Image (tube, rainbow, N blue to C red):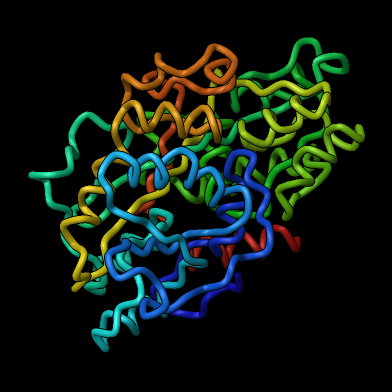
Length: 353
């Protein structure tokens, strides 16, 4: 899965995005098949391989087929330049597209997706928001992890993390500009409700102040866990599903749900899909509370339907933030769709100084 060079992708590469998702460690992609080789009546969902695809099958596609009789074939991997070529030529291989928010915003502007059929899909009562062309179906959380034996009194919010007098210790942050600028502003005392549009100059000033305490700028998501467990950092910005996987492996690690940043995955229907009606039915199904419960328990994702959070098992719920908590931040994908390229360049320069 390589990074795509296209004007439709001002957000980080999809591989980097998925590295953060839950316990999904990306395996080798499964083989992409053209529509002509697939069952004529099956929806074609372009998504990702490995553990992520296994979860999608278990939680969504297989039960959907059992309930509706509509088959769903998963192919790898999402690429907006290919989607644009398919829509432009009318030679569609895909019906459904699994993508992250910023890139989906820009793809919709390019006319690549159908408008959601709101007579089929309930776009109200969501954690986050649907757009005219994209429906959220999976949300995952980034926050602070720590070793409870080494750090019995850890920072539980980003403002506490930035208070080096009360909470001394070595910090691990990501080399990605999105999320990191949000962390900087929250650490500097900005109220979550006032976070957007980001005060970029204030964010970089806050990062300059905390930079001496950042022992590791982490590019690869697995290192957000390994550097913590090897005692190279004391506090690591990582993802709740990664912590769940580490705990299942017997590692002594905890995750603060007191303040987190939530990121969203969306489904869209490719413009001109002959299976438009079935695709809308699939998207509606994926957002149902009972389906969201299954997905959450398989992937430690935050349900997009608020009521589904109370349906998950206590073990899973313990690692899920409450989206209604005023300290919780939902990352604004539209902001990053417009600003990623400029801010990423500035952030890379900051890391080099």
